[in-house]
Amino acid sequence: MMENLSDAIRIIPRKESSHMCLISYFSFKAVFGRKHPPLTSSPNRKKTAISSAADYMMGPHYQEYQDYLNGLGKIADEYAFEKLTVRSDDGLLLAGHLYRIPGNASNRTAVLVHGYGSNGLIAFHAVGREFIRRGYNIFLIDNRGCGESEGNWTAFGQREKDDLMVWIRELVRLFPDDRFVVHGNSLGGTAVCMASSNVFPEQVKALSEDCGFNSTVEQLTHICEMNHIPKFLVKTMEPWFRHYNHTGYSEHTALESVSAATLPMFFAHGKEDRYVPCENAEKLYDACPTEKELIILDGRAHGQACMSEQTYYDPLFAFLDRFCGPAEANRIAG
Image (cartoon, rainbow, N blue to C red; front, top):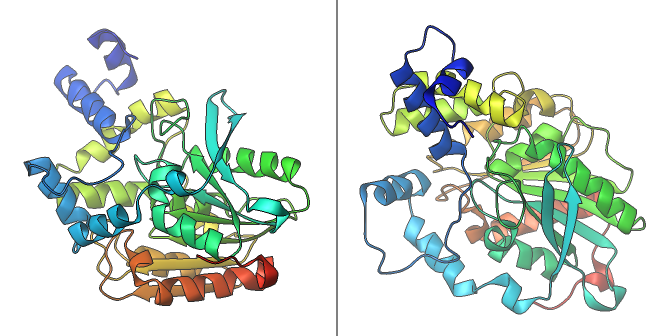
């Protein structure tokens, strides 16, 4: 971490002032720094300007969604997870949590990739349970800088896409007879899209993403516009991002990767999503050259598509099962 302003100035182009360096640096820390969200939403939470802005971005129906998740409880209280670790390509110790249906009852495994500032056990209260009920083992990734994984910075998919491939190789090594699908939500969906142009091991059969964005620059610009923040910060934060993540966020997009996708892909999005407008899913779907399907859920905002349950899960699993094989005896009672 930069310890003094002279170090900071060397990262930002000379034309930027020292004042601008500091603004850009602390904006970078606020957006990309490690987050520790609560497991549940407090019904008596005191409203602040920041929390109200977050509710607006994630809404409408944000509190309804939080109540829905709180009603489900913690998935780790219901299922016994095993912690796994691997090293990222740049040396971080990454963690994830594996649940396998007892008695070797299933050789289908879903790799689930969470969104911004969350972690696997928090993000998949609902979706993770449904994968298990539909006869899948599940592996919940903790992205870098989140949960039990090392790292100080979220990389908006730019590094998470590489971490995902590290996990895929490790899981295939551990379970070579499994058939895998990969599902991502929000930033996790973007990471899945960014990885989609890779050549996957033959055990990986299909990919799915829910409410991901097609470009980091476009998404950051959209967030600035929603919150009346000057858009120049999107440009001035990138040198910091590049310094700490050894890659930028303007040269690689999910949309470009999906246009060279190598596996069947499923896309889902809430029609009322303010945070990541559903036009992102439409563009990703149009660009995808492989077998594909898109659903847009009426009345659902960011990350809330799973609340539609039947109209969300039935098409999702009908698609995944086409490529991963039917559940048959692997389906277990929920």
